[in-house]
Image (cartoon, rainbow, N blue to C red; front, side):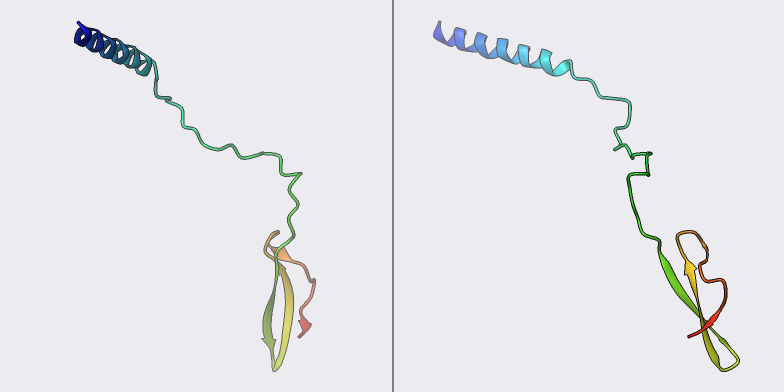
Length: 79
């Protein structure tokens, strides 16, 4: 009699567990982290680099903005 009660308890608990697990559904939507569209809060410095060029025997340099993709210095200056 005690054995039947233990078996019944195990079966009942496993059926309850199986019914709880079967209610879990997979999501069809991908869960990707959202990126903030508001970039006004982020302050980043401008990235610049010098470019060098020889004109004759004189070395010249000019500052290039990598961020804005344009020249910062209006003219080539001797380095």
